[in-house]
Image 1 (cartoon, helix red, strand yellow):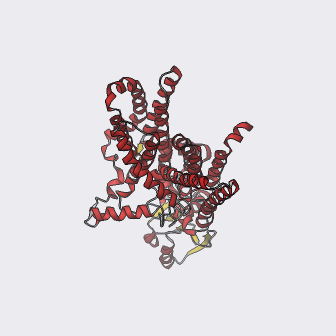
Image 2 (cartoon, helix red, strand yellow):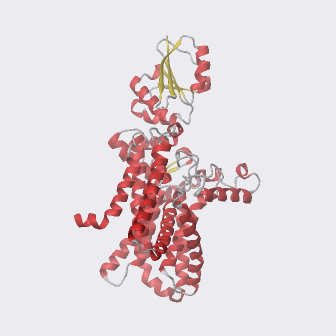
Image 3 (cartoon, helix red, strand yellow):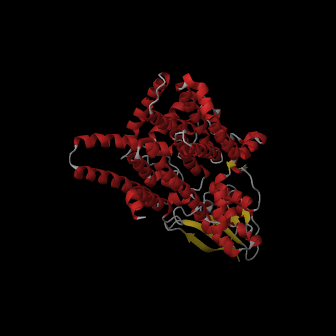
Amino acid sequence: MRNFIRANWPIILIVILGIFFRFWRIDQLPGGLFPDEAANGLDVNAILNGDIQPFYERGNGREALFFYFLAISVALFGRGPWQHHIISAGFGLLAVVATYFLTKRMFGKRVALLASFFMAVSSYAVTISRTAFRANAVPLLSILTLYFLICFFSARGGQTQEQKKKYWYAALSGLSFALGFYTYISFRMLLPLLFVFAIILIYSQRHRIKKLIQEYWAYKLAFAAAFLAGFGWLGYYFLTHPGTFVGRAGQVSIFSPALNNGSILETFIEVFKATMLSFFTVGDLNWRHNVAGYPFLSVFISPFFAFALILCTWAIFRLLKNAWERKLNETTTYQSLTAVWFYFMLIPEITTAEGIPHGLRLIGVIPPIFILSAWGVDWFWQKISAYSRLPYTRSLIAFVFLFSIFIYNYYAYFAVAAASSDYYYAFRSDLTTVSNYLIQRNQKTKTYLALDKFSVQTVDYLTTEKSQPYVLLVPENTYQVQLEKGDQVIFTQSSLIDSNKFEQYHPRAKLIKVEQNKFKEVIMLLYEQL
């Protein structure tokens, strides 16, 4: 064990950092469930009641893999915000580990350590890992698909033991690829990515196509069998429910006349510009996707990302030249793969025109942006090392650089986000307080809740075990309710303004409770009819 720790202490430390950034104070940060997260919980209720589906149609449709992990957590720990957030955080942590192994295969250990460190502490990756959306499974399954494919092509097929490995790698890549379709629509961009690279690889070996078919047909069957075994359930659902395949994508597309103002090209250019700038200047303003307004990459690594993206984009053209000349270069291939991976995962973002930049739609770029950044840092580090003969100076530079990245991201999430009332409201933490009170009171016919139909999903879910012990009122019409002695009316943070008119029409209703959050903001008003 000591030898293992001594040999692997850097990645062990990075994993510990990943755990810390994703799980520390997860019962408080975030302290609520946004209605979209709670909608997942309502589907979890269906799963726990025996309604087993590959796809649930609530909220324009949702692939179900993430929900089954949520169901395990809920079955073990009950319903609540942290029970959901530990699952998304777990996927984020596994993506950090998987990034290390994939990058090590492609660019070596030093780049792998840098890439996994950048992802482990990234305020963008951490924020979205603490948000219980199914999209959090996209990075992990994308990485695993590419990792097993690279392992497959790297393994030699001559010996019996190596052949067995190749079969396992082929099957595992097929299964990972299939399971990715159960996550989020952006994962589907991996299909054209793999297709493009398959065409390039086949073209580079065009002089021996027949031999390739003979050599790889059994492995392709293993890949296909594993893929069909994994994808068949969802594929059949899409076949019998064709309208669910696209979901909400058409509503937010740049091709929608309601969003493109009559010019698809101008809209695309604006979206592309805002998206690319989001890695350097202003990122997503939505607190559930990012520390609002912070760039997706810190100022310490974004220049290296830009540099690496330029060089790796140029590598795509070198790869095409190599394929034409029938002599592929491994380094060029991996550089091209990383750049193309980034560009394909941009597509779900740059073909939409709502909420740009949108950190959730961009979730597929998380692995390649940190791999590219790490590659860029390593490139410059090699240049510095060649000109510097003072190892202590290099060590000091490395320490200051990495520590600055750690401090920047720690401050962004645990100081800026954690100290923002907007962050708490973005997850509707007030509804957790309201739900706890409703569960405690548990008098359905004598308790009225003023809340909109979208937000009530959170309360519906959190009060499942008490069968939603309240009567829902449209907030602006709450003043019309007829009350009897002992009846209670609850206003939440989003419906506080409607309490003014309610008081005018119900002078006998006494305000008996005012609940505030840690920012001294009123989050719940409770009235009781005398």
